[in-house]
Amino acid sequence: MSGAMKTLALGLSTLALSLSAHGQGQPVAKDTQARITAIESCLPDAVVIHGEKHPCETLSHRMQAWRIPGVSVVVIHHGAIEWAKGYGVASVGGDAVTAQTLFQAGSISKPVAAMAALRLVQQGRLSLDTDINSTLQRWKVPASPLAPGAVVTLRELLNHTSGLSVHGFPGYAAGKPVPSLVQVLNGEPPANTAAVQLESMPGSRWNYSGGGYTVMQLLMEDVTHQAFAQLLYDTVIAPLGMRHSTYEQPLPVSMRVDVATPYDADGQPIPGGAHTYPEMAAAGLWSTPSDLALYVLELQRSIKDGVGHVLDKSTTEQMLTAGKGKWGLGIGIGGSAGHPYFQHFGVNEGFEGVLFGYRDSGEGAVIMTNAAGGAELARDLLRSIAVAYAWPDYQPVKRIAITLDRPVLERYVGTYQVAPDLGIRITLEGGQLMSQLTDQRKLPMFPASRSRFFTRTNMEFEFVTDSRGRIEEVVLHQNNQNLNGRKR
Image (cartoon, rainbow, N blue to C red; front, side, top):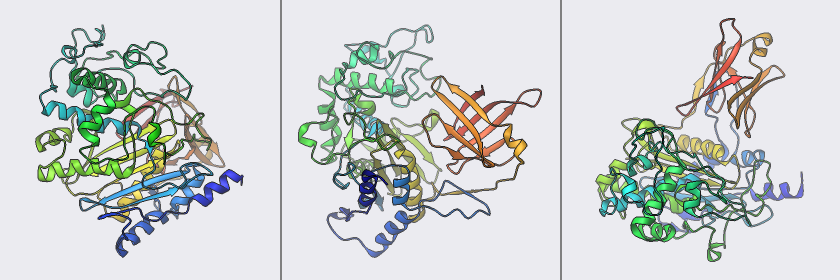
């Protein structure tokens, strides 16, 4: 083991509890500590295979195996923060993660920005359902032959039905020029993404669009004549008491006291450190799980009691009502009619995490990490929390795997092209089929039938044959989305 990895392993000893349901530095109850121990000691797979003994892994083991130096966790129970804890290190060879360690929130920036936009709607300064071009001043949504006569609304920006392009943003490495917001929207140098433009008729379908949130950022600045970071501080961050949060990009020197260093999937630090994101509404928030827990609690209190610091009950109900793509106004919606929840994952360069909360029961969690692959770890950790707190969702599911002979398994081997930059490579290793998406880990595949396979992460692969029975395509089913890949 290298010196750096030894340091990482040593750093994975957990820290003292830094938050409780009643504030800083107070001891936790025995039943809470028992749940914390259970969560740390057993991260279950999404799928448990019938008849197979597959022991769960500890959090520290999985962090080491996946080269994730640091994790910060907060759990909400009965409408209050029950505990918060840091694991590992903010930087390999450096300080341990604490509840105050700052991480980039990635796309978790979007629901926080959405709350600010809805605050402006409440104040009558913006409208959910009028043409945003009538309010935009420095830039307009350009006409498109793909959506003739289209009118884009704020509601469509918020729920990802605007038809606008650009899924996400890679940010700008240290030392690289950073474009203005208008340059980003026009795809002009030094912007590193394409122009934001209409690809389909607004309202016709759900398509995740960071580009749409960047248009929303400009809209909010134009109507308030405020810089976005200051606007978000005034409307959301300060009212909620999020003392360790900011949309300022890059991070102000005054806040660089306890900051996580981002790492790639190989355990190497991102050159130059955190990327800069001028697309603040889409990806620019710096925060902590404890601060984001205040956001979760705000939504829960507003729904339950009608008393919110930012939004009234009616607006919050609109925000948390699912539309196309099971999406509300700024956040994903899931669960059952009796137990609805809201959630959002976030991925920036070297920072990944998740925000989760039940709408009505006062339960939830926020997890942030400082490495590529951290979102998958966050999902596993969320599942462990769900087991410990008996949540109705994120529980492991049981599946039955059948046995197929090697000649049958060999038929599926190959590379399946989903998009120019995304492929699925399927190999046969020692009698075990393995799948690997571009830039992701290899995962064992288990046959449910001769045409359908699943992984322990609950991905499902459905193979399609041609008229002569040859495999020609695979359909990847995951998180209510389908990806089709042609065999090369």
